[in-house]
Image 1 (cartoon, rainbow, N blue to C red):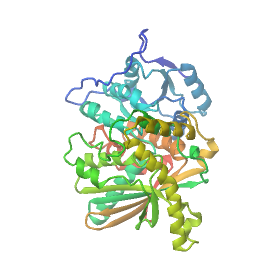
Image 2 (cartoon, rainbow, N blue to C red):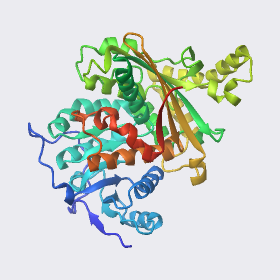
Image 3 (tube, rainbow, N blue to C red):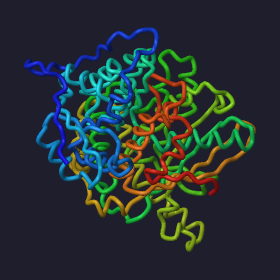
Image 4 (tube, helix red, strand yellow):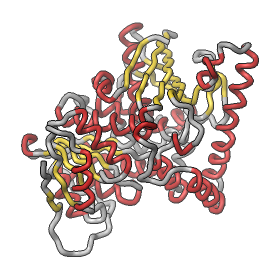
Length: 468
């Protein structure tokens, strides 16, 4: 089956550098092109490792979907489609576009209902892509973990996106989609079962399946690159201020920041009955996104005004048999030892982030570049399916009610589950099954997609289960 190539933008001029200026938007939602004439999903940056996995997910989940792959190199895009197109599936369209050429980005965004941006680093080129989506009437999602850049989006492009009636959803992969949705799910469960708003959520993370012996098997190249970019370019306080993504000028900022201050050292959680170490690749990615979603909800029946969010890696479930064969004292000692091996490097990261000396960041950045995979690289297909993850969720209501649940996900968190989830919600958004919430602008994934995304993610191998 052949594929067509289109070029987004036809000027013969050299690509212009992107600007951060947001195009003017009317005070009423922009009239969008007829949806039947639009592609359902555009994958921008599809030739990278995660981009290829995203195309695989789209062709698997909906072989008849109207999709396109976009990037700078038409030959590579055609080769990608030819190598991955299964028999009987609709051939994706190939569109040439350059993140450094605003005209090509605007032409690209006008073609689609949803644009999934896989072309990082986002702080360097993402502003122009988001601006093009606002001008072209396309919803947007990406895999950014660059919270300082998301803060910039909130300040500079949220209002225009809201006026256009569009949903701009950064952090729509393993960071922070399942954590964000688990928080919303727990709050809905508490309200339905006990009639109480949610006052606190704690999530313990466990990697399941094949034992992890090399950090390069766990952290994706793209996520690692985001952390490296943070060290190189972030001069905000976003890595220590978990309220950094609240609406600018929010009177609740200081109180939210104090309640949700990061734990850089291990701690014991009595409800989860495990020692929790800071989450990898960084404990500073999910909380700001989740707290923004809670603030946008503005629903006192769902979230308490004093809501608190915490997360960590559950050490108990990393022990053989969950440590049940060991005396409690021995199990706890092993958990503390394992947690320390994670927490010490992250504490050094915290010091480097906070430190005024530039060489501290440069040294840590150089170390990470040696230890983590390069963007565009990843494990074998077999390895991607041999790893999964689980989120143990404990929620407390404002008057003391408790909810316990678990999110069980198939596939490598960064390389398999991330593209499966992002494509699943993007197609749901394009088809109108998701995104029925009133929240528009720069939103958290849960705020933008709604509680319906919990059931929808079953198609991506993610199962939400009540009970311990």
